[in-house]
Amino acid sequence: MTTFGQPVQEWQTTVSPLLDEEILRPCEYRMVIPDAKSQVKAAWIIFDRGQDYLKWYEDRRVRGFAGAHQLALVLPAQCRSKEREDMIVLPEKGVGRALFTALDQFAEASGHAELKTSGIIALGWSGAGSLAARLAAYRSERYIAGIAFAPGQYEPLGMDTIELPAPAILRPQLIIANGGDNINGTERPYGYFRKYYEKGAPWTFVVQNHVPHCCLQNAQTLILEWLHAVLGAQPQKGIGDQGYVTVEFSKVVDEWKRPVFNAVSSRVGAKGKIRPKELPAGWMPSAAFAQEWLVFTRKTAPVAVWKP
Image (cartoon, rainbow, N blue to C red; front, side, top):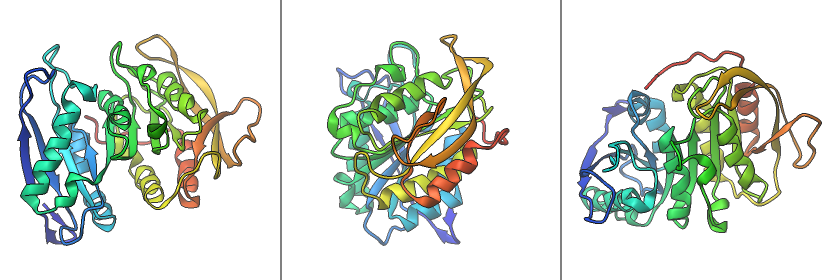
């Protein structure tokens, strides 16, 4: 793999489970550092949940972004559970320890000792979105930001069961729900956002209209603009422009038989200046992101690409 014509070295490692951990077999990890000559400022963790996420990890634009921001890109394969051979979404069941052990091993192998203490950015879809969110509580001192895409998991591990301490609430998160998602829907992802937004969290919510339980690539520009802004911003409670949406329910329902909604209008304004029928959608970390958020939420039928 090359980035802008230059070869990029990839490292691979495995981490074996401890006897008391939920992990079924050793976890596998891959890592690239697009700008290997510079010190790594953070590791962007992209949880593997199919071709969508492998392609994201390999994407030239994503790698260019990572190089410009001095990020390592880390692709953890699913740490499968002993219970049902699905991925583990509770960091304390072993998957969190394994991730940070992998970063330690990559630090030794790559010569980038800073990976042992650098922060992480977590990106996950579906069940991995629940994991990406939960990592904020597991290691809040290392957690820089999180992106939860169409997030959720089977009971009792849904977004409504995530409890975050005060330090974790202050870490920016971007929650993206899909308006055609018959699995995790929009209500629970929005409820997760709203719970902590009302406590002062510098978080952002987005609905991707009429898209099913898939299609991360549709949101690439939005995610990169948000992360670019967040990495350069100093979020504070109650400060900064905010997004607002009005929504309408569709005929789609999620797995809990709750109706799924789409955005019918959106705007950016001061916090607390909500209008009738609007829902708050959170922090706009930059003017450029606010514009992209408006464009994204006003799309009526995005092209669904990169299905898992």
